[in-house]
Amino acid sequence: MDRKTWLAVGLSIVGIFLWQWYYNTAYGPYLKQQEEQRRKQAVAAAMAAKSATPPPAASATVTPTPQPALPPPSMAAQDETLASQGKKDRAEFQFNNDTGGIEAVLLLMHVNEQHGAISLNGNRLMPIGALAMTPGAALGGFTMQADRAHGVVTFSKSDSDGLTIEKRFTLPASDSPEAPYVVNLEVTFGNPSTTALSRPGYFLSTGAAAPIHPRDMPIYTRFDWSSGGKMSGRDVNAFNASSIPLIGYQLHPAQDTFSEAVANVDWASVTSQYFCTILSVTDENLKGASVWSSRFVVAGTPEGTTLYGIQGALGLPGFTLAPGKSLTQKFQIYAGPKELARLDALGHNEEAVMNFGMFGFISKWLLWAMNTLHGWLFGSYAAAIIVLTLIIKTGLWPLQNKATNSMRRMSALSPKMTEVREKYKDDPTKLNEELMKLYRDYGVNPFAGCLPMLIQIPIFFGFYGMLGTAIELRNSSFLWIHDLSQPDTIGHIMGFPINILPLFMAGTMVWQMAISPKSGDATQQRMLMFMPVIFIAFAYNYASALSLYWTTQNLFSIVQLYKTRNTPLPTLEKMSVKKRPGSGGSSNPRKKRPS
Image (cartoon, rainbow, N blue to C red; front, side, top):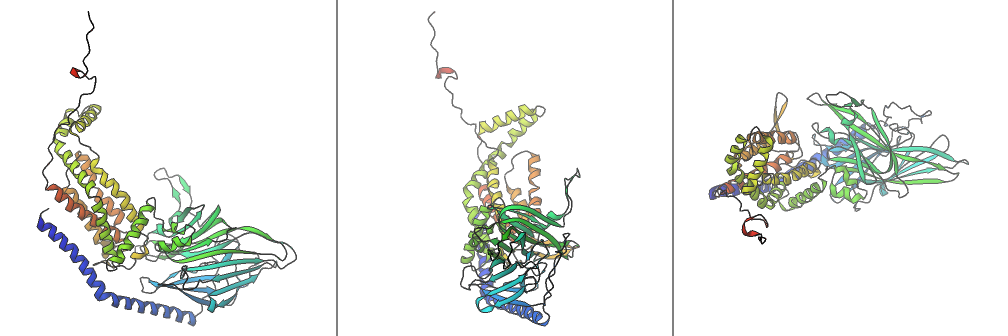
């Protein structure tokens, strides 16, 4: 690459950063003001609607299991909203008396597509923290007392046999590191009667989760749980019938609900792509004994597909109370964004709901690096991704140069390889032997060119796992991209979304392959041409930040290839072979025996 090209590339990169700085400086305060106004309007509208028509008492979810024989009478609707505040964020918890739980959590600092505050469990199939003897059927009949000054809401009721149940929800103080998305829950069972009372077990609801965006992938709408430090889970697709392709053998039919006895459950959760609700057991003498979940229909999409939500519950073990005794069990509820630092601070491996995958350790490092660079680069996540990519590629520069030189040596050796293939085309065994001999003679490693790609694949999937769930990217814009956490769709043709950045990414891959030294046979080169198609399949409907990363690294590789291509071609020379001891000649002369 000549000096003018380097200058053009450098000025382009500088221009991008200057534009981003100007955009944030000139329009940042205005956009923040507009966003705050939208949030206030959303909160005011929600409060007005609530005061005009009180929300109905949450009804039991329809399940195939029978209802209790003597259900408690429905209570008159009564609700209470408590606001929590942290150092930066705020949330509102909406409680309802009858089923005694959190009907919805309003995240005031996160905006949905309608510019209103994000609402968790807004479907209200089961309140968060609702108690049930049969999963999916919350107990009703609770009375409610609210202490706004201390952020406490208490629910109480008595069963027909005399067992008393009290649930106490407490919001941490605003200056607590747990604020604003954590609520502590204490469940107390009392026996005021003169005989022992028993329960075979009960369930606490995690509430429900549903896609925030119509195009969110179903794999992100999940029910997860942790047992012994290991997370397991199911997404909404797992309720479909499953069978072995081609053979048609059915593994399991379609399911309405899922339940499983699991020992030592630390927490259970429902999650969407960027938000989650986690119910954790904080009592040292208590562990969950089972998990339960079911899915429900949220809405349809313009493409005719169905959006599903998921609800869940954590099963607790049974107990027996002697007369006059009580039992108190402690839990913690987190309802908020999937922020790694917040989840890690909860202390029960809750950060596993990020679901980064097998390269999770890379995803965590990339997320930390991206957030660190974001603070240095004018508050732009796009700039942070670009700079992070350049740092990674610069670190891999020596390895990439070595691989490129190896590929050029392979390309120079190609005529001799063609001769060998033609000569031994009818003898595959001999052909492989001669090719390997050719590699040894000329000191060429046929796999050296693959090493940089093998290193970059884990980084790619690390970015894939991180960018798919990083809440930081929501509503972060760059050039024509309005939201880096969503595809950069600019329009539709016959219902098909037109996403520019993945197409540009594929174009840079084709460009890179066109200028790369040709190595291997024609079949291998044709197989490599499918790589852009494979990467488009991964990235087309994914977060546009992933395409931004891969496009940046492609452009960097193209610059590197042009620079390497301007160096003289390598000269092919046979490697000198040292004679081994005892191989003949004068190296190990044998003395003649006297005749």
